[in-house]
Amino acid sequence: MKPVLKTLLATATCAALAVGTSACGGHGAKTAPKNAKGEATVRIMVGGLDKQIYLPAMLAKSLGYYQAHGINVQLSDEPAGVDAETAMLAGQVDAVIGFYDHNIDLQSKGKSTESVVQLLQAPGEVEMVRTDEAATVKSPADFTGKHLGVTGLGSSTNFLTQYLEAKNGVKAGAATSVAVGAGSTFVAAMQNKQIDAGMTTEPTISMLERKHLAQPLIDMRTAAGAKTALGGTYPASCLYLTTAYVQKNPDVVQRLVDVYVETLHWIQSHSAAEIADRMPADYYAGVGKDVYVKALDNEKGMYSPDGLMPADGPQTVLTVLSAFDPTVKGHSVDLAKTWTDAFVHKAK
View 1 (cartoon, rainbow, N blue to C red):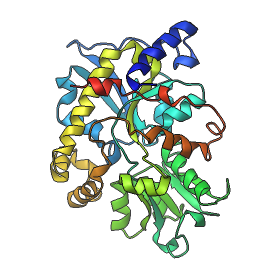
View 2 (cartoon, rainbow, N blue to C red):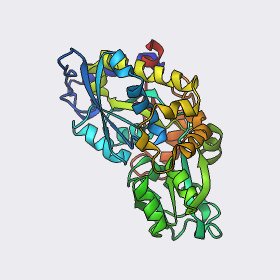
View 3 (spheres, one colour):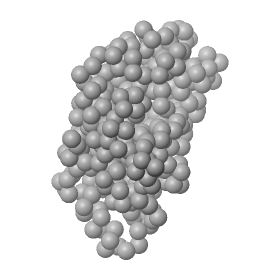
């Protein structure tokens, strides 16, 4: 199916069904409310605002793009993406900036959501092994019996960790996933030996290396690194919403996509140091600005240059989830309904 026709077809399908519940992402989607200035208000939950993988959310605010495009965006923070998706489905927020893989997992659970703009073309994740375990844990094949840190159970880091286990011959349940969040809680879990290895992002990676607590085992901060580890392009951070919300508020969604496409273009035309200058100082207080800038410079290639879904991306993600996720494995998934490029093509 051509991506530009997808949202229209989804609308027609929901109308024909005339039920509008789980098939269309839940009933009750409302027109976005407006503030005193007449701007549409959109509540967006981010799976870790200070993570560099979600940097475009706050950068867009710093650059004044939300206001320039006539939308009142309220950003909230939730370290684990799985909790962010739950909040959206419960109507507590309107949208999520999280990993695209949640859309496939949710469709398998009878929920209809879709990514409308891709922010990352690589996960930006690194599997870090505790320094005193590095001699014995040399690959994911050595994960048997180990405690592995993830941001949350059911999160994208959990998905990726389980895939690395399955791909490298580790039997299901032979390793234990431990929810430790990110940032200081992840570092503490490593320091207190609650976990033997774990998957995290910048600037947590640099914090661990600076303290000599852990070192990289699997590096997916670049598209090439992700392809080596996962077998293909793995689109990661995106803006996703329920299909019902997209259908009810196409103008608001278009404005949001315009904002993020413009932000992605700004990232491509500015240095890591210039980007860091636009971020809140407390985002790099734990590691120092120099380390933050170096980390960002090393992984700047993970950001999408245009917001479009990589051609092989959805299938790669489905292949990964199908390897271990019982919700997805063996189920029929219509990938065309989990994303759309229609809004990106129209972005100004």
